[in-house]
Each structure stands twice: as C-alpha cells, then as structure tokens.
Image (cartoon, rainbow, N blue to C red; front, side, top):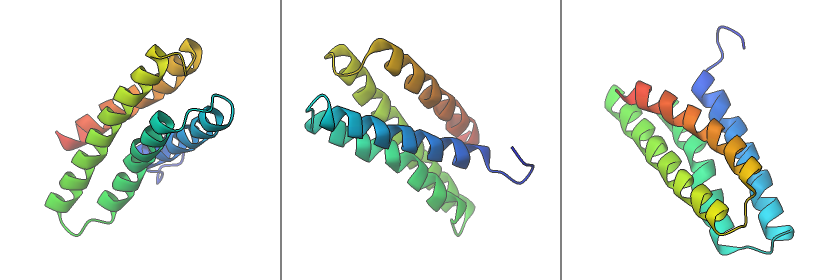
Length: 113
C-alpha cells in the first residue's frame, strides 16, 4: 500500500467486491434471493458510506457517514451469520469474509472514536 492510500476505503471496496461475488454465487448456485439481496445492500453500503464520508463537508458530516458505515457493517455481520446458520454459506467461506468484516469494523470503530 502506498503512503497516500486510504486503508479503510481500500478494504471496504475489496470487501464490497467479495460481497458482490458472494451474492452472484448465492443467487445462481444456491437459488437464494432474499437474504442474498439483503447482504448485497448492506455489504456494499459500507464502502459507499465511507466514500461519502471522505467527501464530507464538515467533521460532523464525516463522523455521521462513518457511523452509518459502521452500522451497515454490523448489519452485514447479521446477514452473514444468518446465511451460515441456515446452510447457504459454508463455514470456510463465512470465516474468511467475516475476518475481513471484523477488520473493517475495528477500523471504523477506531475512526469514529
């Protein structure tokens, strides 16, 4: 990573790519459409809100958008756990993507605080 690279923005974008690929797998291979759409929305919203925060017009705006990103990440964790516990997501895949999500949550929490 270069010095000018925004770590949380990069990680959230890479996470969103993983979420889109997971959605494609769930909808085409598992024929699951409701839960996968929910996680697609919340999982891609994390990075979108971080992007908005970076373009914020004030510190309060920045913090508010980062807080929304954190909440969306928490919601994404809920959908991930539900997909695993209902058998739509294999444990190995769950652990891998959840590790990425937990890293994002820690970064966002430290930024907000």
